[in-house]
Structure formats: structure tokens, C-alpha cells
Length: 88
Length: 225
Image (cartoon, rainbow over all chains, first blue to last red):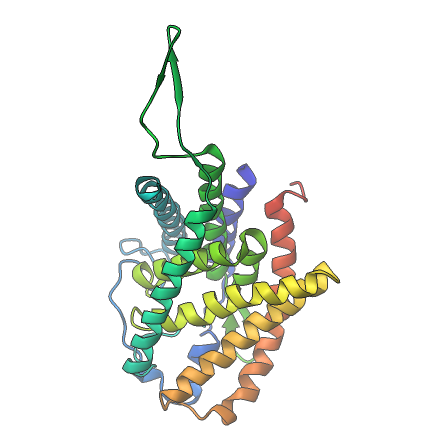
């Protein structure tokens, strides 16, 4: 059980330090073929995996990642509640 | 691999969104049948056995199932944050469809993948909201649901080979479908880019296969810390 909680946190810690800032394959394709300017930025809270109020890039990525884990956990807990409610 | 808003034709994106929502509903129906329910609770107070009418309770086993799903979802989310640099100043990340499919099967896997993609689109602007349908189609339906059957077919012969081929199938088909959608929206010409994209994703799929093999073992507890 511990293993299942600790590993994603560790991966996010490593990701916030080592993850490469290069554009990913699709963005690189868009830049090379000149349709990157068609992108419409959607407005969201943690846009681009960064926490809004933290200036330090490492800390902001770390906080955003941990928040993401929390959101996914809460989403599945809510699904469980809804399933409990609707199941016959 | 997450397609942002604006790349796709609105008609195409809307249609795919509808299809993905229908598929999600179908998977939920399958999952609700599979979840065991404890129908009655016997409560004993002072020798009098009363039958509580609380029949709306999941059994302990299915509560564990939901916890497992949350863990798998969080693992996939964490792995998708880790962008690995590959050739010529581009980076790629783990998809994780095969990882979910091996652990919990295609229907639960589809739900996990689509929920992770939805969270990414809503909160992290990784992939657009209108393009969410296309992303779910590429990564959850093909990357998880269909590649499970590839895995299941070859698993009879060899487990490692099955994982490798399923990962190859999921990454390659996801990238081919992504290119097809982009070329249907008149952004690129398929034949010009196909070689470049497939060349890159061949390497990515081997990386994905290795990470999948290791992380399935770690998740199941075959390797101790």
C-alpha cells in the first residue's frame, strides 16, 4: 500500500527536476510544419503544470503535480460514492 | 501526444467527443455489473437480530477495487508528467494505456485513461477541451482498450513479448491516428510526416514497453523496495 502512494510522489519529484522542457513530438511537428499558431490556449488553473502563485519553477511544478494526484484520488472517491448511490 | 484545441476541425472533434462519451457510458455499464455488492448487513444488538435496510453498500472487495483504480490513475498521471528528451530537441512521454489494461482489464482501463486525460485537460491545459474526444480516442480506446486484446492474444505464447507488441501497437496506432486526424483537418499531408513521426515513436514504444514491464511488477509487489 505504501509503495503505491510513494512511487507516484517520487516520480513527480523527479519529473519536476529532470523532465525536459523541449516541445513534445506533436508540438515539434506543429512548429516544423507551421501550424503551431493555431493553438488556442484554454484557460485553466494550473496551466502548463505550474502552480499559479509560486515563482520557483521546481516548487510550482511539484505542487501542481501533487495537486493533480489529489484531484485524481478525489475523483475516484466521488465515483465510488456515486456508484454506491446508484447501484441496485 | 495531447492534441490542443484549434488543431482539429470542429466537426471532427465534436463527433469524436460524442463517440468517446458513448464509449465511456458503455464501459461504466460493464463495470457496474462487475462490481460485487454486499446486499444486506446483519446487525446484532443484544441478541435481537435486526435486518438493516441499508442495501446500498459496496462490499469491501469493491472498495479496494476503487482504491486500486485511483492508484493506477495517479501512477499514470505521474508518468505522463515525466517528459523524456529524444532525438532533435523533442521530448516524449509514457502513455500508460497498456499498463492500465494489463492490471485491470480493458473496461476499467478505458475509464482510468479517460479520467486522467479529462483531469489533464480541465486543470492543466494539457490537451484541449474540444479535442478531448480525439485524445480519448487515441490514447484510451486504441492505446488501452484495443491493445489489451493484442496483449491477450499473444500472452498465450509469451508474457514479455505480449507486453512489447501491445506497447508497440498502442504507441504506433495512437500516433498514426493522431496524424490521420490532423491531416483530415487539413493541417498536414499524411504521407510527408508519417515517416518522421513513426521513426520517433518506434523508440518511444520500446521505452514504454520497458517502463510498463517494470511498473507492473512494482505495482503487483513482485519487487520489494
